[in-house]
Length: 229
Image (tube, rainbow, N blue to C red):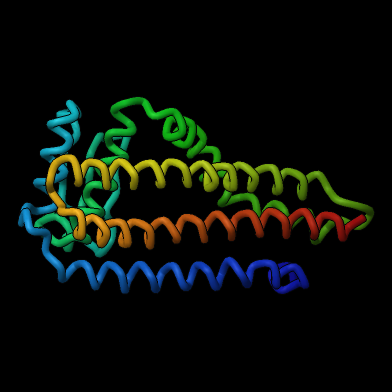
């Protein structure tokens, strides 16, 4: 009943947004994966050239299995590109590789929002996994007002929400860096940059949807807590 109470309607708009964002990412990525950059330089080579030019020579570029599994690992200083991106000279591949390179450069430069996000990640990860079970136990067994377990659950989930909110400026900044790097390095022409921007904008929408969902979940917890008064 906890998961299907009246507050569940709050999750419908962000859920619709999330489904739309996923479809948008797939379709945009597919479209621009078939359009090659005039430079014909592979995504991995672009990433490596940018890293070297910016002095981040300690960052390795590796290939990983999967589709759209691209990410930067700040702990190991490794930029991992998926199989469909690593060797591809497509507009989509270069946009994605430059975005992840943007994260590596954020780390290299000590970009403050990224430092904060990396610092709270362990707490946010711990909180997101335990928040709902703890809150649910408190919700079920509370009889005379909100229980301390409900408050602990809300506090833990608030940390996860903070992490999600902090992710937005980090991702937007990485995308801005990516487009500037691709333009300044002449890896993409002006009309090709528009395609890379569409790919990155679609990806950014998934983070917006995730943050909206997290905020609605937090509001839902507060409403359920209030129902126990």
